Length: 229
Image (cartoon, rainbow, N blue to C red):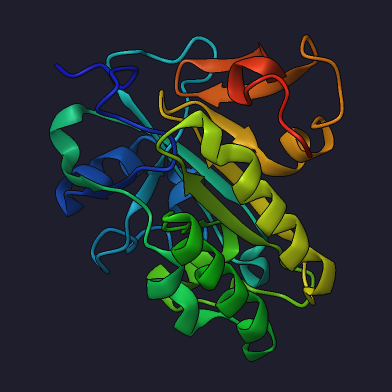
């Protein structure tokens, strides 16, 4: 059985669950099954998202989750599934693919971020409310929604030039740009935290996230010493 801590599994992976296995899982969680949209989730072809194991959860089972839209109470569903229940795994869709579901007022910001990605040779992916509205068509986005993105970088020297660009787009954006840089070893760091730490000492620490957990990492291990911000 594949351990989800293996490098072939990543945070934010989208998992398609066999409908029969979904019904069996809900049979053990009747309160979850009664929440809006949950019972027919898999039958509609909607995926769930891979999450970290909570303390005391069975490590042989796959931990998955899904958020419900604000109109359904903003519940966050967490279930455990056998590995055999997962039909296939995919990464989150790109911002370019999901842009159709965004508020039209976001268009200028999205275009600027797509242009930035082209210049820096990075294809941003979507998570958060825009991801789920794109996948389901349900109304996840609200006037206060952030734009949550994942920026996978190929080498560490790309980090701050990319952050420079995101920060410039944020200056004129009509919404908050949130999200993470995904480092070459699959560790994720929040882009704002890394940006705000750019003038700190080399031993300054930032949070790094992976399926294995959360840990503090030195800023200098992400961005080469001597970078001129």
